[in-house]
Length: 141
Image (cartoon, rainbow, N blue to C red):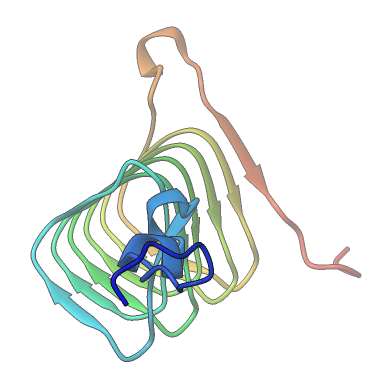
């Protein structure tokens, strides 16, 4: 009756059932609004709304998302609205992005159709460093 049988099921812990302990990224879904700062040691994908600063390893922002705050990441791919400064070693600004704020970068790619209101500063400004890459429209003269 109280024997330890190897056939009895062992209850799963929440982290083993979801794999959350070993998740390579965190996701903020379209139906989520966060008010406050976010610090993540892993990659972050934002499809919802963040009213606060974001600091993470890598940021991917969905086209319908909004960030109101400063963004700091090693790499960032922005496609939605950002109202705040951005600091990234490698930054990709997609065509749907709308950014209001200053941008510090090492390497930046800006797709046609994006809109940025702010100053651009290479992170290594003293040495004249930083790479700026603008993607031209196909078929443009």
